[in-house]
Image (cartoon, rainbow, N blue to C red; front, side, top):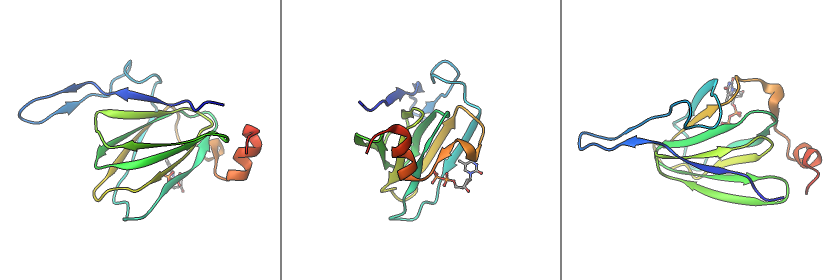
Length: 134
Ligand code: TYD
């Protein structure tokens, strides 16, 4: 099973006064119902470690950098997120882990659904059982 993920180029107005990136309906291939962000992540700490059954997410490193590991049960890919104008679209039923946060990194997440714990698969063995892969 090939890994599905998409980079999204975030429209940006570059200006000597500072740049401005715009997240607007139409640029992102889902209607977002929730925005949250990870910040003050201690050096060496990892986040994620779950898959979402029906929620799409767009991850944007609005400050600093971090790595995202995506697994679909058979393939693993590691993506470096380091540009505030490039977001990573993670589809449903994709296991994700975030590692190697730089000092001051902020991970902005746009989600297609409001928070529901029932949408999470937080156990790797359950995930591989559901995806039928190992
Ligand atoms: P968690 O999913 O472990 O964060 P991450 O994947 O970024 O490492 O979430 C941490 C806690 O926050 C957990 O108890 C669930 C809660 N939470 C909410 O209440 N609402 C939300 O929108 C999110 C993303 C998490």
